[in-house]
Image (cartoon, rainbow, N blue to C red; front, side, top):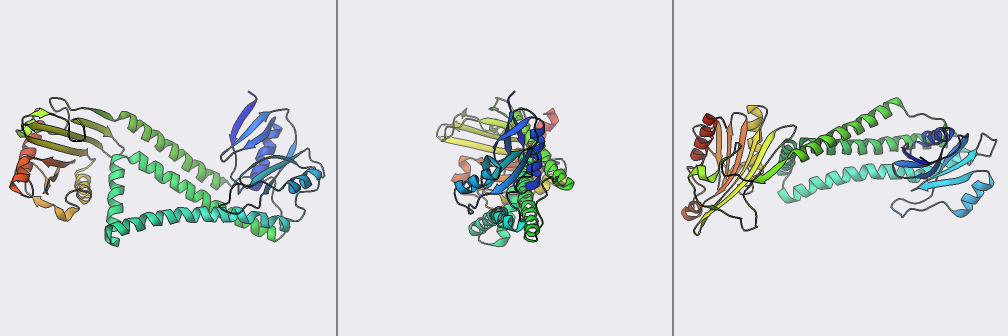
Length: 395
C-alpha cells in the first residue's frame, strides 16, 4: 500500500496540523494532498520534517484562490517547499531541523493572515443561526402569528420524533457538531490572532485540548450510532399490498360492512400496508380503495403503538393539530364512544385512543357527501366495534 488517508485537524488548529504532518513523516508517510476532511499521504522513508501553515488572502465568498507565485518563490528561496493547499490553507515543509529562517520571524506579521479564517468561522456560525431563523420566519409568514408558528414547529417535530426518532437524533447531532465546530473554531482563531498581535508565536508542537477531542468524538460517535439506527429502521420497514384479511391492528372496509371491488385510486395507487418501528413507537400506515358501481369508498389509517397511554393521548392532539381537512384541533369535536378511551370527529377525519394505541383515520364514503354532514356520525362506533372484535380474537 503506497497511499493512505487520515482525518486531519481543523484549519484553526495550526500547530496541531503541523505536528500531525511531522508525526506522519516520521512514520514514513509524506503529505501529498489535503482535502476538506482527509489528508492523502504517499509511502516514503521515515524522515524528520518540519511543516508550516500559511493562509492565502482570499476574501470570504470568493472563489478558491492560491498563494501568489512570488510569495511561494520567496518561501522556496528561504528553504520552504510548497506541498499542497486546500481552500485558504497552504502547507510548506523542509527536511530536518535546520536553522532556516521562519516564514514569519515576527508573529505580528502573521496575525493579519488569520483574519479571513476568523471571518469564515464567524460567518459560518452566523449563517447557520440565520437559516434556522429564516425557517421560523417562513413558518410565521404561513401561519400568520407567533403562537401558530410555535405550534407548527412543535407539531412537525413531534411527528418526526415518533415516526423517525433516529433520523431526528442524527440531524440534531450533526447540527450540534457543526455549530460547536464553527463556534470553537472562531474562539480558537481569535485567541491565536490576539496572541500573535502581542508577539506570541504559534506553538508548532501544540496538542489538541482533551475536552475538545472528547466533545467532537462524542458527537461524531452519536451521529454514527443514530445514523446506523436510521438505516436499520429504513431497512426494516415493510410495504406490501393489503391482504384479503387484516394482519395487523388496522380495520378493513369489508369489516365496516362495505363490500365491493378493490381498485386503484385516481392517482394509480393500490391498497397497501406499510409497517415499521422507530425508537419511539411501532406504526402502521394503510390505504384501501373499494368501489361498487358508481360509488367508491376509501380509508387511510395511521396507527401508532406508544409506550404509555399518556403518550398516546398527547400524540392524538399532535395528529389533530396536523390534520389536513380539520386544519387543527378546533376543527374536531369530541365524542363519547363505547370501547374507546378518547374519540374525536371531523369532516372525513377521526382520531381515537384506546389504551396506548392511537388511530388517525381519514375515511370517505358516498353518504358523507350526499348528506352534506360534517362526517359519518356512526363511523367511530363501527370502528370501535371492529377493534373490539380484533381484541377478542387476539389479533
